Length: 351
Ligand code: BYC
Picture 1 (cartoon, rainbow, N blue to C red):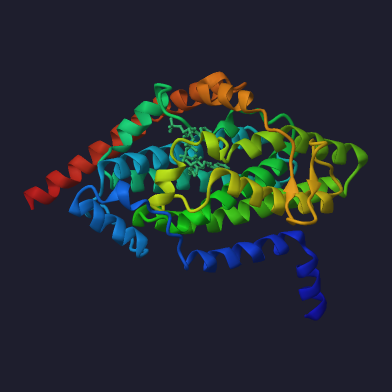
Picture 2: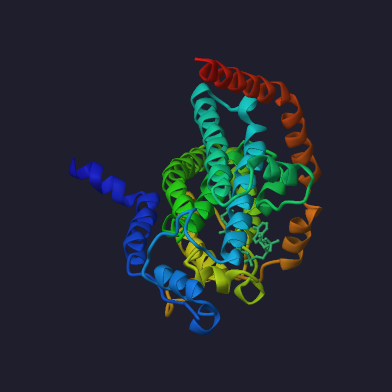
């Protein structure tokens, strides 16, 4: 028993999860970032902000400022689209997974992502939009989704790197969302985070296997880290000084940490994991600051980020084409479900 426990504690993933658990309990203390001048414009607005400050959950039928509703619809729908588009880069490798076990895990992961998209569309619908409208915006190329899914998955090691790094970044961003002030989003995120944690571990385990394999396999893992590292740092959004929405989202406790704050937590957690794998990071400026205890990083190419977010990503056109095709091919399923629902209602009414 003892040696199992010791082995578990040597596992870098365990060391990563501990601080996250500590953070969850830390969130309970709450952060009071409100700017009273901006939120007490009307008595309803003041009462609303007081509820937020008291860590009350806001539910769909409660009074809320229009801008709060709009911010949530924007963020939750972008998040839902990211999950659905996020199925594509990994879906690309389901038929080429190197073993039955790997294939089963990857299939389950991609299905989980479809499920996350559905919970999130359902959470957005509680704010008075329809899933059909949100999906139409995505298919029309008018909606944003995470920049990360516009990069290609060139080798099997990319599946490891996505699980380890992309899902790792997602967990770092989404654990605080479990305490988002909007009840349906916060509740959806609890289950999503549990599943993301499994996704992240399966990715790290792929990386570990490759790094303990042949020199060629290890080189594949290194190449995947080299290509995914910087785009993963961009997942957290623009630097704080350029983030339009952070201040209000923090005031409303939709966001609990700034983009740069979460990015730094991710880097601090991930660099030791990469070193445990025996890999190096594609950043010559990366160094541990012994005074702050943080890993300092080199400059992020924000020009690339802006280009990808504006639709100029390498796979952007392919991703939307694939979604449009899937939507068209699924028309008969939606029609059949609607016809069945209408038949059931008519039968109930006739009885
Ligand atoms: N990519 O003011 P800011 C997953 C946009 S799913 C594209 O800081 P905010 C997974 C931002 O939308 C991962 N756009 O915004 C799935 C805004 O534009 P608009 C998705 C980005 O909202 C499958 C503008 O830049 N996770 O992990 O305060 C398999 C200014 O930004 C990005 C979520 O959606 C980006 N990376 O903060 C595996 C989490 N970053 O709307 C894994 C929920 C920023 O004004 N979302 N923009 O046109 C959030 O936490 C926040 O929305 C963000 C951005 C931190 C992403």
